Image (cartoon, rainbow, N blue to C red; front, side, top):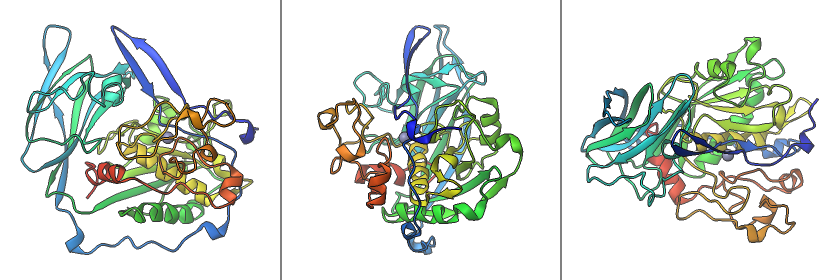
Length: 395
Ligand SMILES: [Zn+2]
């Protein structure tokens, strides 16, 4: 049996080289620390997910595949048109054998390559640094980019297909996401995560973002009770591929296989393949990691689900574990390694109080004693909220 309290709190960072270009893959796993006990006092009031018609942003979303041309120089190229009412897009490149994929360039209608080495997206967007099986570029992933109207062009390394999920419509004035939860295993059922979903909804609603949460779907096949955090694992792929194509899919899975480094949760991409059925069309939240016995830590599980959903929609960790790498947003608090008081090489929430430890996207959770003292991770910055408001899947 796993000892949750001895699990390493390291961020999983793989650095490797592929072919003639470097790939820097940052996983979006939320790391495990020991889990505390849950408290019913953590559960706040039921959220109001309704909006009036006047609050609704008029927008539509469509996915299409882009025909590519073999340049004869080892690259594939393609183009797409963003119409005058374009809001955002996710451009994704796929390889069915899960080998590495990446874009070489993506140029906007003015001819600016937004993946150039001078761009904040360089080696940050998975479509720049590369990833296995699926990589992408989200526009906007900060407010310094926009889905400019006109013809965009890209050059791509070897791949099986490129798809774009494009949002069009009026400029967004509010933010609503439709969320589809799923649960696996036999220890917990849908009713056991309903309080968690309410807390998660409240985390977003206090930041001005409405979640419309659909009824939880129970997936009872036994092979999905414990699945790997790797989205290229065949069982994980089969599970996530069941995700709906018009929702943010949250998979609450009972556990991980024994022997695998325990995580609270992990996202299928940063962002995920919005609106595209695939192995990455959702996030995993591991229930056992959030339990004491069979009692789920509602607040912690809600924070994990909010965090992984944030990744899936394009938000990076505000501060990575080492205190030397930060997100691409200008207004999120940073916790530098100089605050590593115990010199363990990691900036823990307790060392980053006032330096972003309360942000939904901080790299790891508060310790159990801090949680018991009421510490939470429930804030989002203006820039983070901007990315979510302009998200291709938002309405
Ligand atoms: Zn994370």
